[in-house]
View 1 (cartoon, rainbow, N blue to C red):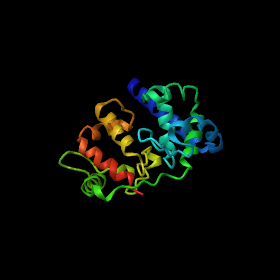
View 2: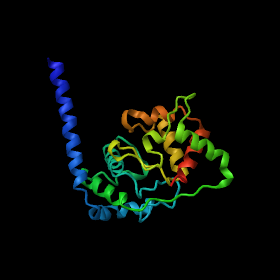
View 3: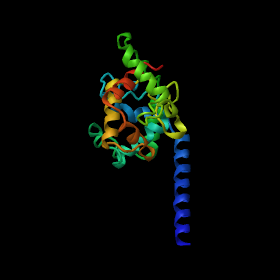
View 4: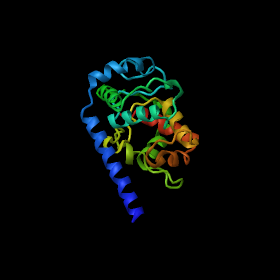
Amino acid sequence: MRKLLASLAITMGAVGTAHAQTDLQADADAAAGRELAQTCAACHGQQGISAVGSFPNLAGQQMSYLAKQIMDIRDGNRVVAQMAGLVDDYSDQDAWDVAAHFAGQDANLGQTSDEDAELLARGEELYRAGDMSKGIPACSACHTPTGVGIGSAVYPGLSGQHVEYTISTLQDFASGERANSPNNLMGDIASKMSDQDMEAVANYVLGLN
């Protein structure tokens, strides 16, 4: 009986948290987020498109994903050295406001080179079909065929993202340095990818518009 009550309490707590986050998302103020995001521009660009490959583009990203990353960094669930202290004082609503600002910007339109045809073909294969021999599922299953992601599932958009950033993110998931995806799904997937696989997918999603 105690175990049942404890399980119910945990379930009700999760439901309550989900409802609270839904309310925060509904109340997200992009104008307020724009003001808060001024400090983000140095790395992520004024419109959320970074000029440096190691910093991710945020423009057009799923709002739910951005808010989660900000709160995870704030709470220590994801370590980003360059962001140390920058969001420590953010409330959950601040995180949603900033996320709303960047989500409303036009996403980056990346371009790939025809000289990398073989690499891009491998990237497309992994993205659309996966590699069952390695146990790698299709990226499109979670990130959609067009690479926009799924906001309701907190799956990020990948379209137009910098190659360097995508590769480093996959490497962090593979090594366990980053483990804040739902049920550490990305850690399991990335650990099965070779360096060449990561490079191929990263180049393919850059031009996935």
